[in-house]
Amino acid sequence: MLSILVLTKNEQHDLPGCLRSVSWSDDVVVYDSCSTDRTKEIASSSGARVVERPFDSWSVHQNWGLRNIAFLYPWVFYIDADERLDLAAVAELQAIARNPDPRFVAYRIRRRDYFLGRQLKYVQSSPWYIRFFRPEFVHYERLVNPVTLVDGSVGDLQYPLDHYPFSKGISHWFARHNSYSSLEAQQILQNRVSQEPFSLRAAFMERDFNLRRFHQKELFYRLPARPLIKFLLLYVLKCGFLDGRPGFTYALLQSIYEAMIVLKVQELEKQQPFVSFVG
Image (tube, rainbow, N blue to C red; front, side, top):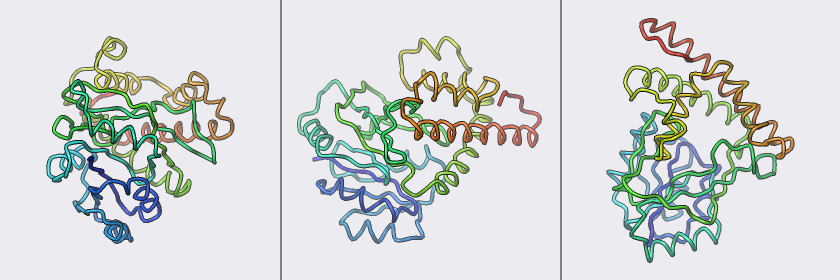
């Protein structure tokens, strides 16, 4: 009825729970980046197909998967190993796959993040993600935290996707975001020399959500004191304080992540002084 795509890299801890939440599908594809733990063994024993490819960058890797994996069904739901679908969300997806609305080629789903045993209802920067789609209408851009571009109209799903980003502990979160911050710094450098010019108007007025997000990111990258601004944005303006101690800790972690990006941008600027841009 619909296919499932799971991207993995050493996910033996989270993958079993993820696969249980999508076990109703007879076409689960685990798209693995050469894991060295038991990820592929767990996937195969669950009945999933394993497609292996070395990871290069997020957008290139994801685009390769959508163009080269032979999915059994026209509709695909993309899920990470630390995410879970509940029964209500599954029923909604199955209903759309059985009787698709001709107006839409993709759908956004609201993601609920959990931290320290509590749902983060306010402190998330953006809870909506495009995860259910016809692959031929979708592609990704950016080295990390890729933007999903859709050639067609996008609908919204009613039921959410549950996400446990700290399931492997704080140390793993820092290690992952250390890698992400390096790619973000490289992306900022690339944007300054190769992508479309930044538009302040587009950051607020562009109708296309993904283009508006691109220009909003570029606006944010031009602001001074970004780590402090990120904390205030999440904790004060988005009312992250209503999430209690988990909300404060999450906002603090995000500001630390932003500081890592700023420092790495400055480092890249020193290595390539002929390129001038604001970190």
